[in-house]
Image (cartoon, rainbow, N blue to C red; front, side):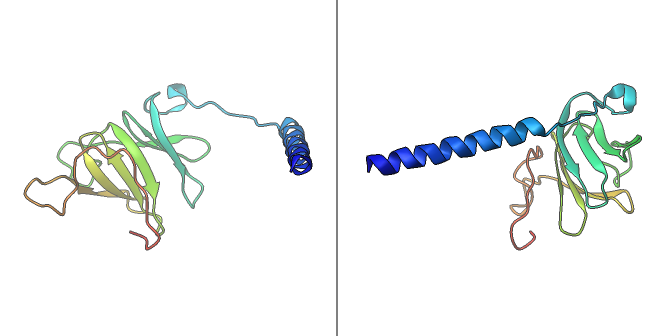
Length: 147
């Protein structure tokens, strides 16, 4: 048993050493994006890269699409029910069909179609037990059945 423990420990140390050596050889370069680059707000809650390659940032002041060169910002437009429900956003998820689901602080859930750039809003309705449980959506995911 002691021999097996010693052998296992040696293998783990070797794997750790190889992993550290590999990590040391890999250099990561980061570009910093800020308000000066067109980002609508410096507090970014979540980021997702869609199947087209766009980077989407949810911030406390809107949804930001980055194409590698510049930002397009989507916000709530008063009186336009096809715009985001709220500007303070908390979460984002791209579903299997390429639709973006955006959760807002006190604004419910927004289904954002990146082709039409139109939103369908889903809100909590106390009289409807099938509606959202609350209007703050902090996390979005999809089950194996695509729901």
